[in-house]
Length: 47
Image (spheres, rainbow, N blue to C red):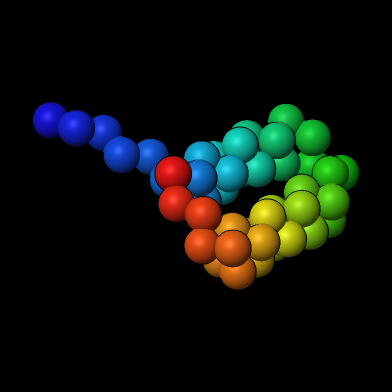
């Protein structure tokens, strides 16, 4: 069995944990997540 973790899923998990730990960071985390996903999508980076 091979485990493939894409960058998007990893970012989502990290953002979710950070929001649970520090809810005040919600706006910042969402903004960074959306920018990262946009850059990944535009550049076509696949991990």
